[in-house]
Image (cartoon, rainbow, N blue to C red; front, side, top):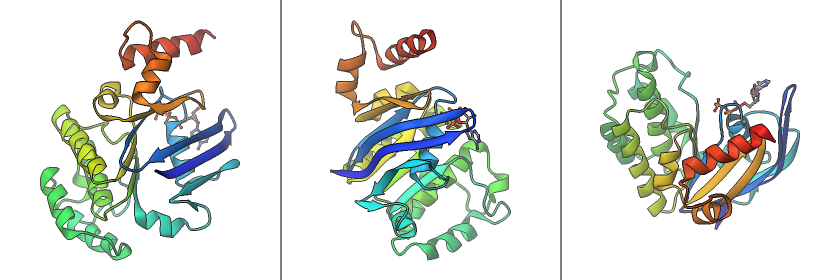
Length: 240
Ligand SMILES: Nc1ncnc2c1ncn2[C@@H]1O[C@H](COP(=O)(O)OP(=O)(O)OP(=O)(O)O)[C@@H](O)[C@H]1O
């Protein structure tokens, strides 16, 4: 069942266009979003979250157009786009105290669980966190309000291999409880490990948005892995 539907999304910057982007995100699935630097991943994520103005197309969450009932939708989803830059001098504990008031679904038990799992010290402020800890803090907030959909821009970048592995396991747990997890990454092995569906973007266009097995059937040659497939496709794009 799809929980996010994107149709013909279009966004124009002076020197870049995100064109005719269409795909869906399914409940209880992990979707990996890949593309090289500058391919348009962050632009697309910000567009679907209505964080930037778009020039065409439609986006709905749970069948509701995001432009019409954005705040209602945002209570039901978790997202992170880059590191934390709000309340830089407040303690994590105090920020959580403020944020929880926005969510009827805030779950203190989940907050404690992920605080322990990520080994975050709630007496620290965002200014005192390393880059990897900031990513974890972002996720902590997203995971503490029972989000039905998680949209995460490069959540594993800045994490050490152990924390990355833990995070992928958390994604799998969340998926098993029916959550839709969508994340962008440059680390193709992470996608190979846990994604059900793959969306591959190049130069602002979606080249493939398919279940991983179908993606491999369509694009891989001679038993290549995903990483080699993407590298070959990128070289093809460069030389086209
Ligand atoms: N605010 C902006 N104004 C103008 N151009 C922008 C703006 N934000 C992004 N762009 C351009 O849009 C294109 C896509 O950038 P985007 O950040 O979406 O790529 P990305 O795939 O997320 O890259 P990376 O993997 O490096 O994070 C780039 O050419 C970038 O210069």
